[in-house]
Amino acid sequence: MASEGEQQEVKALGLWVSPFVRRVEWALKLKGIHYQYLEEEDLFSNKSPLLLQLNPVRKKVPVLLHHHKAIGESFVILEYIDETWTHNPLLPQHPHERALARFWAKFCEEKVFESAWNALCSIGEEEKEKAVELTKEALEHIEGELKGKKNKFFGGDEIGYLDIAIGWISYWLPVWEEVGSMSILDPIKFPNIIAWISNFLNHPLIKHNLPPRDRMVNYFHGRRKLLTSTPHIKNGVQGGEEGVKLIGAWDSPFGKRVEWALKLKGIDYDYVEEDLPKKSPLLLQLNPVYKKVPVLVHHQKPIAESLIILQYIDDTWKHNPNFCLLILMGEPPQGFGLNSPTTRSSKLV
Image 1 (cartoon, rainbow, N blue to C red):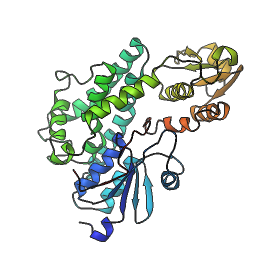
Image 2: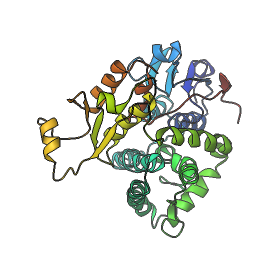
Image 3: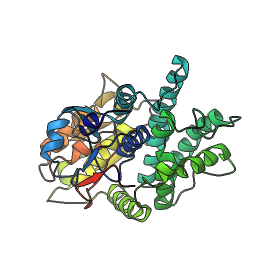
Image 4: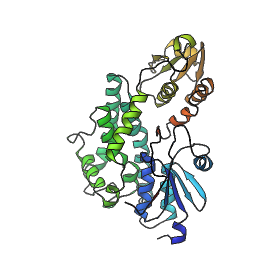
C-alpha cells in the first residue's frame, strides 16, 4: 500500500460523465489510493487554467497529478497507476496476457466505442443502422473472448485492467441505446457479455461509483440533439453564400469530427458521400496527394486532413471559439460541463 504521504499527493481532474475519467477513478479505488477529485466544470467553452496548465497539448480530461507531475490519457494513466502502486495488480503478470489485455482495450476503443458513438450521433436511420451493425460486429469478438471462460471477469475472479478499460460498455452503452432508440446488447446474441456486465456492475466498488443514470440520459439527449441537428444558419453564415461543402464517408471518425465542428459553429454546408474503394473523380481532383476524406471545400478551395480542417474552421468562423478542440477523437466529445461539485473525496462512495 502507498504511504499516507504519497496518497495525499494524488489528484484527478475530470468530468462527471466521462467514461475515460471514471476508469481512472475505478483504478485508484481498486488500489485503495485516496485522492482529491477536481471537476472540470466547463470543458466546452471555458477550460480551467489548471487544465490548460496540466494538459496544454490535449486540453482534455482525465489528468492525474502525482507529486506535482501531470499524466494525461486514460490508458496511460491506468498503466502509471499499476506501475506506481504494485499491490492489487490490474494487468496480468504474464507478458502475453498483458499484451492481449492491451490489444482488446485498444480494439474496444477503436471499434466498439467509435461505432456506438457514431450510431448515437447519426442523422439518418440508414446511417444509424450501419453504425449499429458495426458495433455489434465488434462486440462479437468480445463475446468470443469471454466464451467458455468460467471466471467472473476477463482476467479471473477479480476486476483487472481490461474490465476497467471497457467498463463503459456496462453502463454508458445502455444509456446510449436508450437515448438513440437503438438495440445493441442483445442478451441472446451476447450472453457472455451480459453476464460480465452483471458481475461488473454488481461489484461493490463499481456499483457505488457510477454517474447518476437519469442525469446521464438528459446529458446525452442534449449532446445528441446538438450533433444531429440539421445544418442551419447562424451568425450570418450561410452555405449558399460561402459555398461550404464537405466530402466524407459515413463511417469515418475523421469526417465525423469535421461535421461536428461545422454543426457546433452553426455552419450550413452541403455533404457529399464518397465511395472510398472506388474514389470519385471529385475526390481525386480535390485531394490528389492523399486521395482520402475528409475534404472541406470553402470558396471553391479544398482543405484536407481533419485536424487541419478543424483549425481552419476555428480560424475562419470566430464565433464559439475553441469548440473544435473538443471533438478530437482521441477521446470523443465530453460536453457542456453541467454544474457539478468542484471537489469530491475518493472516500465518498
